[in-house]
Length: 83
Image (cartoon, rainbow, N blue to C red; front, side, top):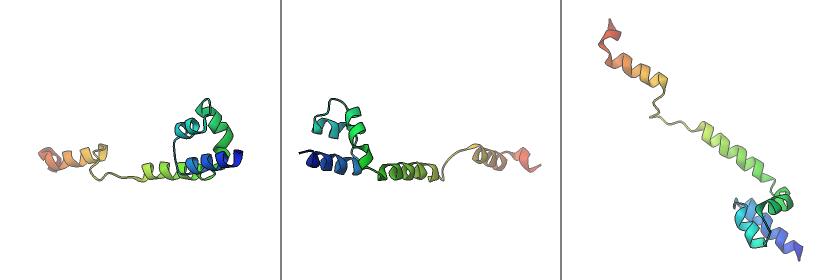
């Protein structure tokens, strides 16, 4: 009987489902029980986490207004900068 539960939990967690839904579905008293029991079944979780962080850190917004952009704009629009 435990094998189908284990399969269900591993499929849901590996698919990226949050912990709360599988916990409720499996009838665990709290999500911590599900985590303690099943997280070892999702070895790709760490890989997905690192990939998500990498995507966030690599995203560049070409319209970003950082300090360098502000300085460049001031040099172009400030007539004193050409003197």
